[in-house]
Length: 333
Ligand SMILES: [Zn+2]
Image (cartoon, rainbow, N blue to C red; front, side, top):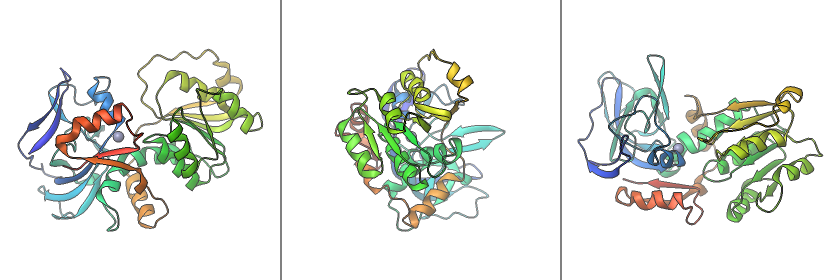
């Protein structure tokens, strides 16, 4: 089969012909119907990020996967060939956490093998492309908002970065009743989309002081919760500056740069908190698929474009350079 593989030592990336993998006992082979292209993949390709359990050799990237069960491994009883599924990002083995597409081969390939417990059945009405973005681009902000941040109805919220993950965050914030929702993004198209999808106010941080504007919009108090979906040190400091006393600041974007907090007194006297967030627990994807089946949430507008496996380099380049301001790009092998 064809698979897009990254050499984890040399950073060489290429399409390769590899054997179709057989599922181990308890695992399932899935025919990939759609797999997202994500900023996390760009960090992997740039050599800035590695799964904790896979540092050497070659790895098939792609962690936002939907497809059809092809072959259940030994001992797997509740899945049959043809079942439509999404694959949850994480699973647990011997007390350790493993991520598909980071710690073991992912979905930029014709087939992927994954533990049976990561499979989640798709509603009949949900197309594979929308389903494939649920396991990360939707479930990550879902868990960040509902679990890590514990956002309650009526709480004020600011989010930095309304691209491929932040866009879903603001739809979810709208759904859980946060208000006002303030979105910060330098791209005009992103701000326009944010207003359309649920933001009450948008701020261009290149044109005005985002923190001062957030204070102004919240009667001088600041927001209850502030999210960084970008992963830049300056933004992480701004989260604290924009947060109200007792405010929670949530780091979701992957930041590999040093961070200097010049005003740690905020954490002390104002009792502010910094909470880190990664991915989502096993309940997130089933919860979201139920909400999608009931039409409570709709992410169909998020699929900006799809590419064949042969076009993977084009898809990566398009995400890297934000050509056409994509929300999500998917590969259809
Ligand atoms: Zn992702």
